[in-house]
Amino acid sequence: MDGVQRKVGARAFDILAYLYENAGRVVSKDELLRKVWTDLTVEEGNLTVHISALRKLMGHGAIATVPGVGYQLTLPQGAMTEPRRFDPLPLPDKPSLAVLPFANLTGDPGQEHLVDGIVSNLVAALSRISTIFVISASSTFTLKGRVIDLREVGMQLGVRYILEGSVQQFNDRLRINTQLVDAMTSHTIWSDRFNGNLPDIFELQDDVADHVAAAVEPNVRNSESMRASTKPTEDIRAYDLCLKAAPKVYRLADREQFLYSKDLLERALELDPHYVDAKALMCRLYGWACGARWITFEEARAGLSLAEEVLKDHRNDPLALAFAGTLIAYVGGQQERGVKILQQAYKLNPNSSAVLTQSGFCNHYVGNTDTAISHFERSIRLNPLDPNIGHVRSGLGGALLMAGRIEESIATLKQAHADAPEFGTTLLHLMLVYWKAGRTDEAQVYAARLLEQAPWTTRSGYLKDSPCQTPEYVSLVRSAFRDCGIPD
Picture 1 (cartoon, rainbow, N blue to C red):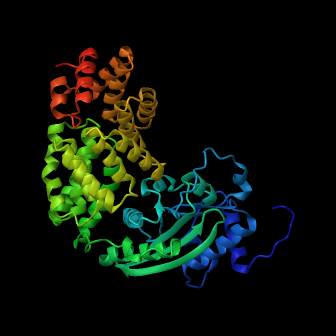
Picture 2: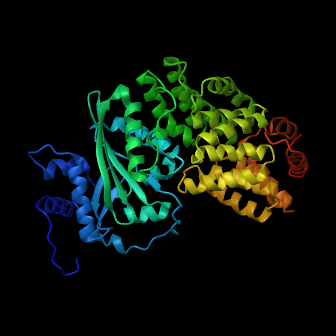
Picture 3: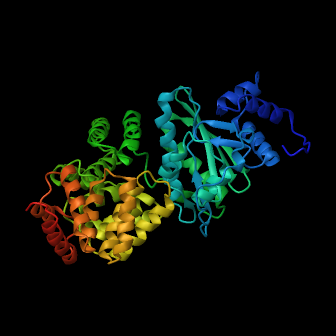
């Protein structure tokens, strides 16, 4: 490296040699364990200890992590000298954590959704602990399969700690291997493994969350991370269908994906009619598809009965409350009630970017503009790499418009449109803000695009369906729709 000789242990040398031989590709953790410990069965913790020692010896960027896969030697390719293309985020004033996608060591690529579901649920449990700042899973999942440097990830996300891990499966037996790393030094602070049966997956996830919380913040009450109720479903088949649907629901691309996700969730509810998580995802699905203008407000109201069922049996799940409350406010005409439901969800988990986003929309509907803006902005900070950030910015841009911050609104909505050009609500907001700015020609361009995406849009129909019924908003819609050519 720099002409200086350094001592390294035999196993660490073997790991380095194997990574060097395969410097052009990512080497999985499972492969390293098999090749370096040829005739021995060892724990993954042995590997992570040696990787940490090599990083300390060679530099932070010498061995890159590929979340959900393994490691790659990057030093020979000069990866450490590549300039960063981001502005580092400041660290919060509390312990901060990002959970990277776990490696799938089950031997079955079809179990990827199970591994990702474990990580998502772990993040959800940790985010409910008020003394820890946790980056949303939808941000960290954007790093999946990419060669990364832990130190740069820490700076990009603005966190001090990073949790890595893997999942192994032997029939119905699961093993979750974890290690907590200081992002600034790549030093392993804590590592452990957790064993359990697949039907006990929920208890196993809570156990991992408790131990991680205790390692990050020793003074935290471990029970804070536990679910407030029993396991969400007794039917592991319904759980599996929900895991398959969730990534689609959270990142809808088109109407076909809406129908596919809807089918998965309906099948889950056939297996377990009391499955609150599936009902909540259905609420999210209907609301987001309507916001994108792939379905009408009337079609989205098919989810209202499920929203009411969630509210009767939400089990103190903040996401379930948030998705049900937002649908009730958005298409159910009960905006004030929606705000109260979101206030309850916020109290349960003020650190959830999804809850903050839904709260932003509901507060915008009733004219609580300052709260809406604050919650949208906090959501973006908790989830800076969110694939849905265009939707969040769309809501923020609409709130900025009603706050009279016209130029900020235009800039935010233009970015929102670049992030998610398929989201019909952004087209609506751009039409309104350009009309408000006196730029009618540009407003008419977005009105035409809105009509192309949602040809059923009319002025009278939208005034009846619009979740925002403040006098200022209604007046704006009446005038802008008329001048931009939206039919009566």
